[in-house]
Amino acid sequence: MKGFLNYVRRNPNLGIGILMFTILFVFCAVGYFRYDLAKSAYPLAAPANKPPSWQYPLGTDSQGRELYAVIVAGTFLTLRIGVTAGLIGLATGTVLGFIAAYFRGWVDVVIKSLVDILLTIPGLMVLIIIASATKQAMSITLLALIIASLAWMGPTRNIRAQVLSLRERPFLQAARLSGMNSIEIIFLELMPNLLPYLAASLVGSVTGGIFASIGLEAFGLGAMREPTLGMTIYWVIYYSALLKGMWWWAMAPVTVIIIIFVGLFSLGAGL
Image (cartoon, rainbow, N blue to C red; front, side, top):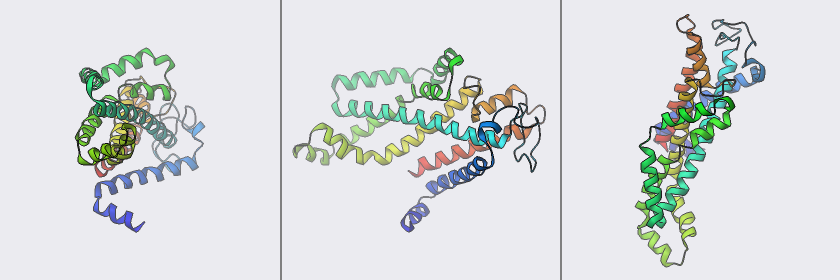
């Protein structure tokens, strides 16, 4: 434990990220034990349009939802979307990047060309088209899969570059001469050297997944019945909350989103 604390002191970015998520965890833990999220985070759970008070710490919205419960439930759901999309995108990108860079030849040409072509297409536009086509059946899982469908290209390109830089290093030449096959070299030599980079890439992929989900939901293309942070912002826009002076309705999700992004950015920089 002492060694970990010393490492965090030498790495302030990592410390800031851990602090941000500790604050978020405490906030959500208090809400989780205080509210029945299955009721309080959905319409008609409380009087509508109430400003923050002792009874309603973050106020209520025009649908009669208690915003503290909405934000707690929405934080879990939004992180679930980001982690799911990030893991799928990074896993796919890692496999393709390793295959392209290590085996080279026509496989590398095909994968690299496909990634270069797809990266020229505006990702948000594609996501909006796909989400619009599946809007009626939209769910948290489906939204995560839609985002993951475009989340693999960046990791593929970056991991390919990393593997190419390691491929001709002396320790890999020694591994080949020792009789190790390609699978053993990938998992026993290359993968351990790339673990810090993969960890940082995962944080970046999760951040991108969360950002994409919030963007789609703000356009009304998310799971309409789920109290995610993005859908909360959509309802703020839909009901013109700021024009009506309901500042607390917008402040709650925006504050949590800022904490999440600052925390993820700091973790990525620290890793």
